[in-house]
Amino acid sequence: MPFSTSKYIKFRQGMQQRIGSLRSKTEDSLELAVDVMMEERVDSFFRVEQGLEEVIRSLIEIEEELEVIRDLSGAMRLESRLEFVEDRWDEFDSEIRERPRRRRKKVSLADMLKAASGGGGALSENPGGVNNAMDAYAIMGVEFGSSLADVTAAFRIKAKQLHPDANNGDRSAEPELRRMLEAYQFLKEYLSLSNTEPMRPPDRPYSPAE
Image (cartoon, rainbow, N blue to C red; front, side, top):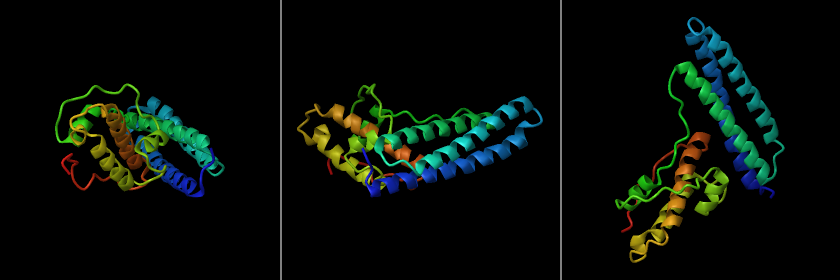
C-alpha cells in the first residue's frame, strides 16, 4: 500500500529524528566506554566498541533506505529494524554503565483501565499485545503519524463511549476498551521514544462523569 505524501513526510521526519538521536547517544556511549572500561574491563570494551560501531553502521543503512521507502509494508519493516537497533544500543549502553536494561515498558491494562475509570476492578490482561505503531494508530482510529495530542483526544472520546458507566453498566465493550487503552499506552511511549514531540499527559484525568 503506497503512502500519501503527507504520511510519508511525517514517517520520514519521525524516523530521521530517532536515527539522529540514537547516533548521538551511541557516540556518547563510545566515549563513556573508553573512560570506564579500558582499565578494568578491557576485554569487554573491545566487544562493546565493536557492537556500538555496528549500531552506527546500521543507522547509516537505515537512513539510506529511508530515502527510497514509499509503501506501508516497507515502512513497517524499516521501523522494526530501527527498533531492533535501538534495543542493541540499550544492551551495550547498559553494560557500559553496569545497569539493568531499560526494556520497553510492558502495558498493564488493569492499571490503565483503573486510572482511566477513576477506580474500578482489575481486568485480565489481553495476551495479544499491540506490537507496532501502525496497529496502534489504526486501533485508535487516527491517521498514522498523528501527534500525541490528537491521540489523547481520540482516547478520551472513545473511552467515554466504551466505558460501562456510559452504557448503563453494560461491560460487553470492555475487550475493545482494553485494546484501545493498550494502543494508547503504546503510542505514548512510541512518540516519546521517537522524539516526534515531547511526551505530555492529558490536561486532566479522565472521569466517566464528564
